[in-house]
Image (cartoon, rainbow, N blue to C red; front, side, top):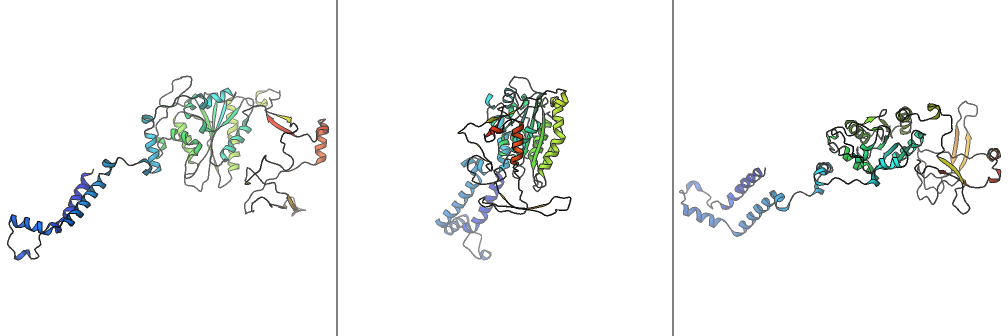
Length: 415
């Protein structure tokens, strides 16, 4: 390919040198045809050493630029675009990087089974929303027959995905970051499933493995696993829910079976409503896939084993009191660390109407926040002392009215 710029360089050099190495005569039409000796004399007299140095420098510099790849080596990786680097990296993974050895500590299927679970919920979260949805989903679906475990995929190897069986389930809760990108903690999984970033559907088949050595189908290595999928995104971005959509397509292409439809939450509209609607449609299908999940379904009228227990907080241990929501100092208040703002005024605006409408004022002093249109407010109600005393009397706990208590999980892996 370099022959064309070289020829061009020679042509430019010839054009540039022609006046320098040409004759000094200005009226060639009245002169006789010069002899060879006369031409050599004209060239010698028309060229100075300064001109020779300049012309030589131009030629050497141009040649160095054209052949820089061969002189100084290939273009460094940091000069490539992000897409080029990702494609180059994925293209050379199998050839340049030896296959990763099995690490039982990074086997999420083994961890799930050792914990007595049959569902693993993996979240791809950038700001914490998908992680929160995954935890809430695990709580909603938990039952004697559906035992979920919430895990961060960044801590585990995607190669173990093929170890799941048809009596187990993986649920993906995946947010889309940036312009259709995978979240940081799902990057390795996404790159393995979609090795071709420009055309994910044309990606190579990942090299999954099973700890038991079971041979996998070369074209559809995930044909024995089942999964559910919910994506979080914002439709104001062009690549809406791209992360979840690509992972969903790749799992199906590799033989996996999806339970229910892929859910898509839109943060620009009502993502909570989207999530609730997807759960309402999908959770019964998940329970059906894993067997009877409630006493009503199974005909078992015995009470399920509790996953939480109430314990008394010993003297000297830290306990939360009325108005204290978090342990330790909170530097910045947000949706996860709300400010306990006291209500300073509450006025009934519709005293005679069927609709109950209140005008409420709260004090934000000390919060560092300013109310803006569209902000949300959460309500932390308190129980009337009289009703609390009635409950304590019914439970024969009046003598322990001022003893702090705490709820502790009986299952160390409880969501």
